Length: 409
Image (cartoon, rainbow, N blue to C red; front, side, top):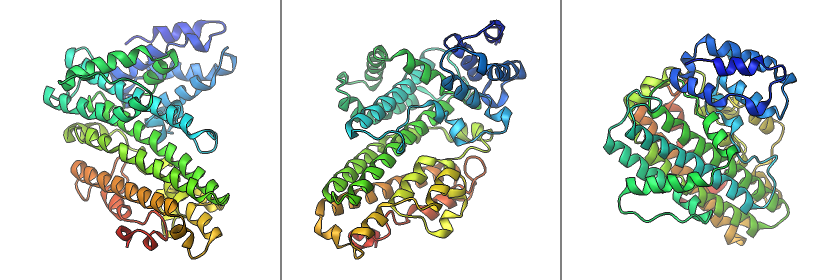
């Protein structure tokens, strides 16, 4: 791999962001793996970052890309940079206030982009030995199962986007037709985002699957945080049925992610162990979106708040410490004995549905982690792993949920 395109860009008197050789850089990362990318690439990439103030054109995206690409060199590698989350158009509770249907459409668009890109990658690897990440490729039967689950995971979002899913009896034929059709609607921005958000640490085939599925989960969790924030506002404004409706919707969206777990379960354990040794420092315990969802349901107990779970996400830790309002607290302000729930069946039902969906999500996560790691091994990045997940698996979602949900008693 020759970094000449990058050197040519640097040689311009006034380089522009739109001419930055993203494709060449990403190809190099796919060829070597981020953990093994040589200095012949990282040195000019650092030079590119130093020249950013003089580069013409919008610089924010390029700056974020360089930060993601150089995270290991900079000693700033973590879960966010591993998944390239700063480069994904993920909904955010602070800056994405707006109609729920518009936010859902944005999430659905991203969700389908990630999954159809994964399907395309699997099909390309099946068809060509020259596809990237050549190590430990699965056999055709595994790929067939994988793309079937990926199509199932994408289907609800595709339907909401008014996308006609082609009819086909053979899952592989359906996957090929679906990826060909969805590729037509991709914008230049979509294509750039998909390219720049895949910088695996190794050359192991299954890491592509791992990254795309985790990115899809993060997108959904982020939208759940938006929904919970909206539900809290509705409770504060005494629009309790509206809060219940928003929670029911959030529960439905979380249940839709079930095929993602089935998809992730097709990952070969030996492949996972081959690349995870290079992910030290990046762990899902650092998921900001998940901790935001959890803390918006109820304020974490002091022991959990001051544990690695929240210390790993400093901004959420600060929000909670500074008095972030949870749904539990919003309900306390209305009626301390929570009879508001009994008097507003829609809200009570929404809370029940959401709590049940979160519990199922946690339990499935734990089962898959046990399959990949066993019951004692540390998690990705030398974190507590399955014992940590077991501890959190059955924690109450809402503090007083036992008052209205028999499963939580």
